[in-house]
Amino acid sequence: MITSSVHPPIIKILQQGFVIGLNLALLFGHESCLADPYNRDTAYIGIMSRLMFSTDLNDTRIATELVFTEFMKNIGKKGEFFDFDSPNDVIKAMQQHRLDAVLTDTLDYLKIDHMVNQNHRYSVVFGPSKLQKIILLTRRSDKINSLEQLRQKRLTHPSGINLGLLFLDVALMKERLPIAKRFFSTSTPVGDVNTAIIDLFFNKADAALVTDFSFDTASELNTQIANHLEVLVASEPIVPMVIGINKFVPSEFTEKVDEMAARLHELPKTLHLLSLFKGKGIVKISNQDLLSARVLKKEYEKLINSDRVE
Image (spheres, rainbow, N blue to C red):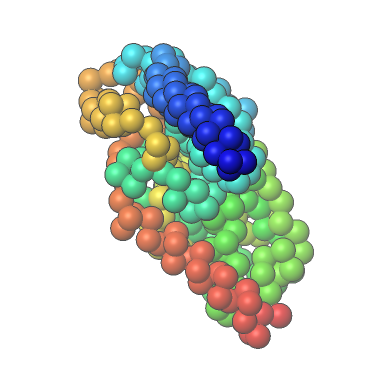
């Protein structure tokens, strides 16, 4: 008798609770479907602090916003820009659907690659190729034939050329030499790549870490640069920067980006803005294009942990 008088109310309460819970789940599920975080007129674009090293940081920031504001207009979106210093912050923003795309240097990009749509990665083309070599320049008159001869000499480089410094460390370690910060007497970051070349030319440094494109451009403007400076070591061709689209972004957005990238030649205003930091176009990049950077990073990690490092 006790059992029959107590259990029916409990069962009824549980049944009512189940019905209420189910209704709430359906309600919130419906609302979450309606609240699509990407159903907005604004594209959220992240800019990493080390995005470019060919121009002054402030100039790069301004030019980047101008270019991609115009680019977004072409696909019917506004552009809102956010600065990031850490790849981890980029990952978090993408996971929370607060970031549609990010512009970053290649070294930082490798840390966020798993958050990016693998079919929608791009780079800005500088010069004749989408890939560039990192090169170490010296003066011909110094007759430097090996890295060893630069021990305790002065190095200059653009402030954001982190992948380049990684390459230089690898080149030094392969010769059983200390990494750059211990090998050179000074390692001076400067505002842009042209300043690094000029400082070497005028004997303010003994070596300059730049790109082959920047050296070729400077040599075209002043033939004396090519006559007085030469390449000591060079990397494999590497993607200088990456534009990655969040893998959660709907295909409607990525398809429009693809279309605009392919049609840039029809958009003179966007191309003109790209030219502000010497860009000539935006192209898709593949896993093969990123391979040299991945190999270099793995090589660095292996060497830095080996017993051969001084």
